[in-house]
Length: 162
Image (cartoon, rainbow, N blue to C red; front, side, top):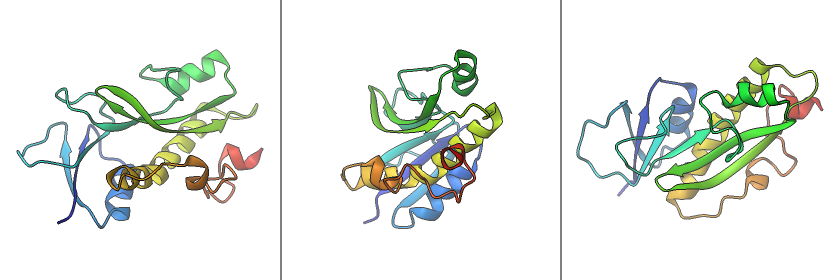
């Protein structure tokens, strides 16, 4: 029997497409803002949703938590002048970090470039992390990121430009 994933989202994004496309061995159901069925799911994933009816969901945040837990973490990181940010994948209730992936903010980087890089990393890594969580496997971000810190963007991100 296939494991079942519920994706609860506030706005449909390319990350949802990446999850559906890459996790063909799982049954994936998508719900905007609210699950409309009583089915039991093996995992609830939140895209743009950090709280959902007091359920424990797996979601992501565009900072290396616990830093910048704000609604606009990339903007806050730029205003603070940090040189390293990244993405955190975590459970919400209780809050428990599952994986983090750092990126360097180069001197010439701009807000939009970093935010786009984080979106790319999210859609690349989220399906891998979901698969590992559901199969009870160790999440090794060095291996997932090809151990060089490269996510395979072909040179289009600030990490490869350094």
